[in-house]
Length: 152
Image 1 (tube, rainbow, N blue to C red):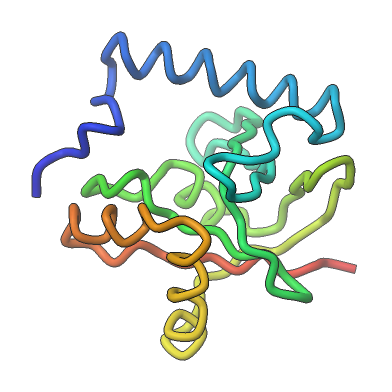
Image 2 (image 1 turned 90 degrees about the vertical axis):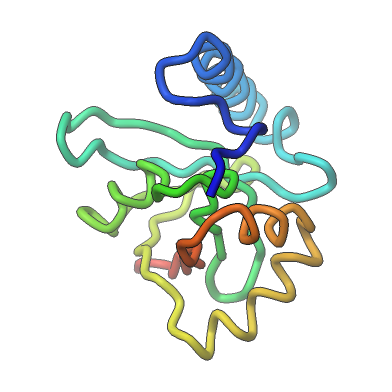
């Protein structure tokens, strides 16, 4: 499948610019308790903390999420790219982490939805953010639906 035009190729100037903008969004979200940067095209955004599985570097990624009590649901879409996003690979290596939803920080454990959960959640995710269907058509991989369950 062709690379997504919405997601810049690795190492490109567009990707570096996107990374700068993402960093600004994370800082604004954190400083304002989610009053700034908490929505993208009507869908809610959380901040996912994760640690680089190779580098050990702490990272934060803003992601769209679906509230599905008691957990939260995110999609490892990477805009329909052929490869999984780094944050998902990092979570598979270290699934216990924190997220920030608005002004609240939560401890969570990440796991991939099973087939029945995916079947139930996918229509809700697409209703929230229709581009997920577009992304799914761009790639041959099944984009993981990730459940973030609360950790006591």
